Image 1 (cartoon, one colour):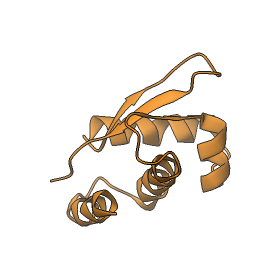
Image 2 (cartoon, rainbow, N blue to C red):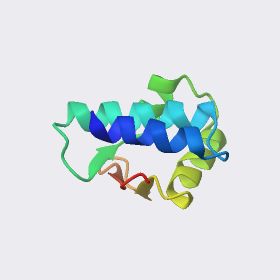
Image 3 (tube, rainbow, N blue to C red):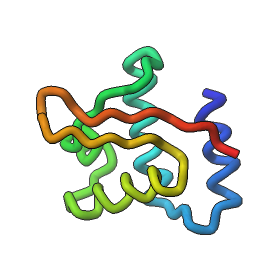
Length: 93
């Protein structure tokens, strides 16, 4: 739970973060929680899009890449659907 609290604190100070980033981060955190906090967590685009109600693949990729570029997650896309995309949560400052 501390990781999520740290993210909300950091996001409140980070003018680049929008509601969409927060929505996706929270969905990623829920997947991580369901996987007993194993790191990395492997997720599917379809699952995250379903959880967040995001309808556009381009929108999903845009915000995942921004969370990665802004230093909140380490995002390694997998182009193998059975393997899933690898996500690690980075320390929020």
